Image (cartoon, rainbow, N blue to C red):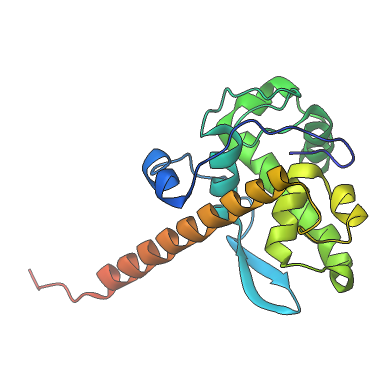
Length: 199
């Protein structure tokens, strides 16, 4: 991921949805610091599933390895850089937490989700300028920074093939994980609704 205006190389990639389903069948679950779904855009009849998105980015960024370190110094499950860590922890906790704590799985995903929500807020403020699907722009901005997307007119079509591939893999996994969560919720609801035999 890229903290605001610095390019970051992401080394971990997933080859596709079917492969991801087998390799990351039980990834570490994201911290639930916000409701799992939030509006994507007033102009789109779509909901953003943060839980599934955090899982997808975790899979692509680090392969689910909480001790992962990227070539540019990114740390942990969501490969967060030092500058982003400092800014997001200050916003969330009122102080900058030590970067060594980026290796804590739950905290890393909590800070990563906070960064996603921060970017989503910036994009919402510029929603009239978006020239691509909100979710695709959000994922690309997580990877290469909001200023990168602004410089190409808020579209993924003008980004490098590597970034577009990253976005595609994250979106594929997001779709997969969202479907899994919906199916699980339906099964749970059906189980709860099943009449129980009297004792």
